[in-house]
Length: 612
Image (cartoon, rainbow, N blue to C red; front, side, top):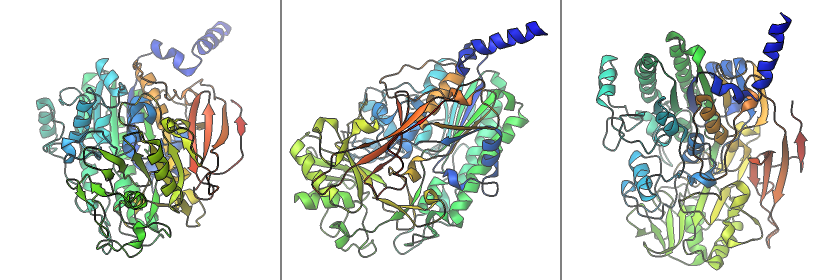
């Protein structure tokens, strides 16, 4: 008996840290479940019982971080590759691509949640605009079965260079429609045999956002997501069981994000905002999907060999459209509440401040006249279609501003215009512009790396505040550059309400009933999935996540510190601050902006947390 204990102790020591024995064991399966925009403070036994049970029985990550800018495509790329945004170049949902994108109507500023657009952008940047190997691509190359199912855009990014449908299974909103990733003949046959249609349904009433006079949807995205669940549970998982080899499956639930954006519970009112009955129904919808996937694993006998990781891409907040300083808010528009900010207010304010013309890249580059706004908020300021002086990519809770010429004087003028606006809370500028009072360089927030897509000159963070509930992170309000109305939902800011996300895991490679207080991020998820699947990934750039070994059996809790970095004050005394946690050289960003204008930006100057 004593010899057995000695051998066991030696084996445990040999396998510390937790990943050391991975190569000695067969790879397990991985399911990544992404509940888009689900706030961790809304998880409970009544609304989200499956998620609550998973966090209780498995690992509960409590110190989680979305990548800033806190948008879907930026974070999907980080999950997919294990790299931060400065390396992937997926700076937001809408970017300046640097060329006119056919799949986006020849716009210079494409919305990336589109299969054709992703193909165009990949083609322009030598076949891979991320310039990274994704975990799923590497898994596929290693002979692991791969599938990605769910929301259009992020679903494809996990293996975006494989567009044949013959290798990785891709099912999203465009499945069975022109521009979608095709289904293999074998997949079509399996769908038919399971009684599942080969064409994904639309969102139906859930896609209706309303307008400034008409409330948006009162329905969750149930029909479309029921279809995705049917594909996963009736076709893909049984197929993977038949193959009897490891698999990787991503399931991206559009809810609650899509419903929180469009909900009609709170038109032009900040309360209840995104906490009304329609948003709660969307949370239940996502939870039901997770429950169905877990039930399928049990029914197929896959539960014991499958790790399930749950996350969200970002948090969420209620939209505010109010400003006392914006020129754009002083104008009258036929589709905007009087004195509210129109979509595209940043582009309008910059154009007005510079005294330049404004062109709409999403409306065949027509000039935007006074009293009107661009279609999607994007704008080219000064110059012409081929040579704009400034490009604004509107996204929601933060915007990207590009100065293609690199003109430092012009960039400083734009910064002066933005810094005086009451809707701004912090400015981050390209390192190439040099130190500018009131701003921090983008390298300070890991936006400068090996990216091949155009790098923004200025990242504009918008103001956030709380309506005064018990947990401010669940009732945060943010000014947003969006066509949605005050009272609907958005994300994208550097507030803690947008950076804190759902985080959990359960399965053979994770501890049971374990609370993990160490800082984690969506880039860490990519590296952790690669470790579980035993695949090697070629890294381009050094802005990478880490394997979450402390959440695994015999794993050691890392040490981490908390610090704050502040810019020099500008002429008005404004400073941009960022609050950061560090695990070794890896940084995790809690919140940033101007003091008093960003929810969650506060706390002590520095702290150190000992390992356990």
